[in-house]
Amino acid sequence: MKITYEQIKESAAFIEQQGIAKPHVGIILGTGLGGLVSSIQIIKEIDYASIPNFPVSTVESHKGKLIYGELEGKKVLAMQGRFHYYEGYNMQQITLPVRVMKLLGVQQLLISNAAGAVNLNYKKGSLMLLDDHINLLPENPLTGKNINELGPRFPDMSQPFDKNINQLLKKTAKENNVTLHEGVYASVPGPNLETRAEYRYIKLIGGDAVGMSTVPEVIVANHMNLPCAAVSVLTDECNPDNLHPVSLQEILDVAAEAEKGLITLFKKVVACL
Image (cartoon, rainbow, N blue to C red; front, side, top):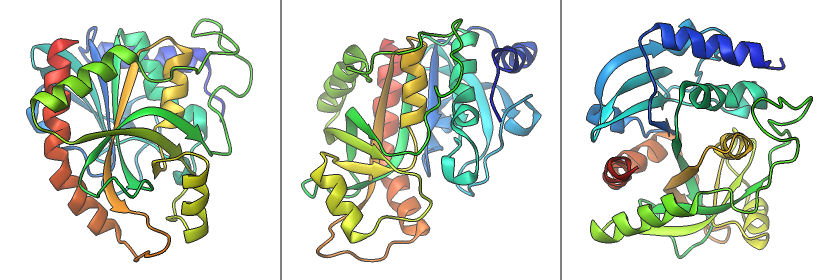
């Protein structure tokens, strides 16, 4: 299913009709990372299922709600749950909400995800700021006829993550004693976790962490000239020479604990944006 510019505008118009006016910051909350919502003074909640053209979240840890409210004095629009390629959606469906955020007036985008630590110097329960990414997904959200109203045919990706927001995140982490590594995120299709050989490969090509999201949203944000930054919560350690089976519940438990630092970072950074 190709998403058209008319469908993007239709989705944005519906959301505006619900009283959502000019949010300043967009936020995408990843697996097990919905706790930030409790810090938002909620003005309006909208189920994804009620928004025209929106997919619905099929992952149990993703609530599937669009949250509009105030955080640290700024109007924010937060996705409590995102969409993934492994759910059966194509890249244009996955990135539709980012397109809609831009049309609604969002000026900066903060993204979170749960990821596995391939860099064995990074321990589970810590955070990693994305400095760059490797796209190992089989599709690209920009495939097909370009929507010229949104961005150029061949967007530059030499600096996918905004330098100013990244500097602000690093400064905030240091001031609040939050461990924030910095590295390269590799995005894979999922839903299975990786084999030992795949972890070795990801490390070999320069990946510090691996996950199943984020890169499509970042590509689309860059296409639309929407400054973005992303932080991974490292939920497991991917040592191919000492690999142990990991369950979704273990990942969620680690994410819930590590999320405290992420919430601190996002709240303080939103206040400065």
